Image 1 (cartoon, rainbow, N blue to C red):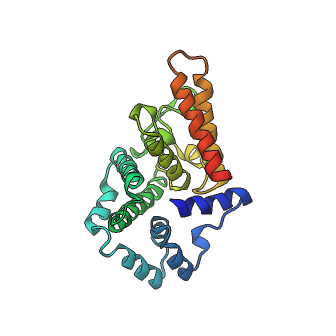
Image 2: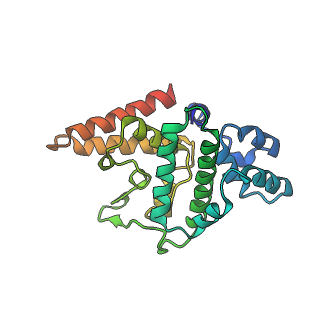
Image 3: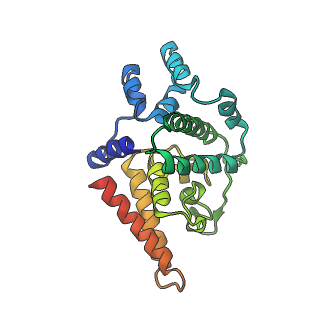
Length: 236
């Protein structure tokens, strides 16, 4: 996650990014040491023989191929739960010695999930992969938005470390199909300033709506602290 954070800081400060699709195969090989899941995701869209060989070399021995293929038939709720579980697992094991193989496998599964989300977002909005209907306030205020869909919910009783790891991951991941295409597109591309601003606005919006509401004081404080943490760690 540290390389992704450093990369995104430069993106945010410059208000621009260099998408992986613009990188040569040699550059992708270098990047794969730091962002294997992002590189796998990019390679799945490339048609050259070299890209296919490189993708196969990354996947071979790192994750059971049948497990990756099952992602395509996995229902959307389970897929989101799997993404969250993988991220929480990485949160607790990413810095432990002797976990390199497990971490690599988790990144490859995450890449496969993200590729599947890109495919599913191209499906018609009335398809059952678009799970959450909008509230009466419209698609800008869904019952279960991006953050909750990807595990960031105070009802989950997650630690500060887990919540902030999930927020970091949400800043850089491909998003699942939630509500409709316009809603997903309003969150911007992975590692973009638009995505960062959307996450910060969401957290501060939660806190604002909780202001003065009895019993929501702790929740409001948590949302504000998480927003300040992101601003401190991604903008400074």
